[in-house]
Image (cartoon, helix red, strand yellow):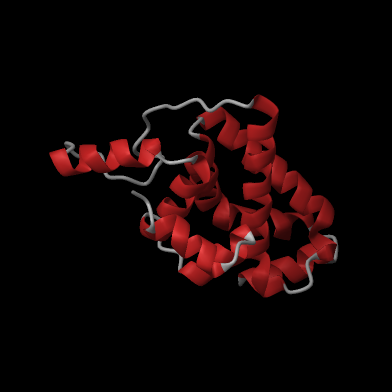
Length: 159
């Protein structure tokens, strides 16, 4: 069953359809949360909280085709809420979760890794959404509710 049909059924009260729709995007959602929080446990919590909010509010989703974007926005908002609550970020080294291959790091990779860790969480997340996860600038702007110009500036203008 395609995702649009799952969401329509979920909006009619079918919790199994909702669970299937979320399963289809759970790994990508976790990677987004992890790129923002850099903490495995906090990332899982953010995704779980997002699932709960989405389930409660699924009937408010006007366009079932926009479920991925809507859910990603909820995940990002949960990450922001977590950061506001904790006021700290825990960094861990888990390249597999970040979507990077488990291969020996070259000097260039080490430089890139160090540069990414110097970026604010939002900028790091935008860069990873663009280059690791393959989202277009338009999709990123829609998911983060930021103007496309701001997304471009944060991704391309890092000194």
